[in-house]
Length: 94
Image (cartoon, rainbow, N blue to C red; front, side, top):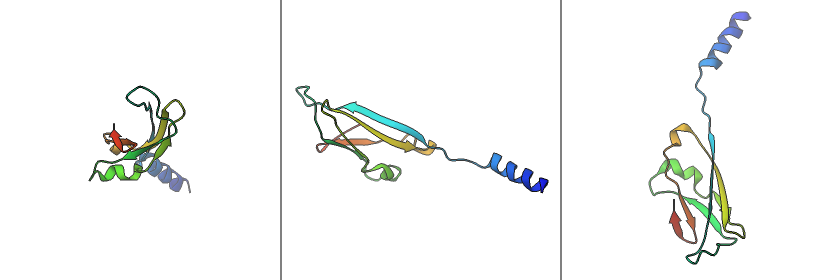
């Protein structure tokens, strides 16, 4: 019994674990005259062919009355260099 417990603990200790980090993307959306974009959706878009990004496509947030938005996504280490585009009113930005 003791050997089984030790073997199980060693397996758990040396097994790789995938941990995701939470990223918060925040910003303020304004028009050219610096007035806020109120109550409009900001979406996550992907560069065509960037398959690692597709799981985040469609994540969204709505701007508040001052134009501020916040999108929260979870990324693993492999996705650390991921390029994410945001879309607001048909315009893409990073």
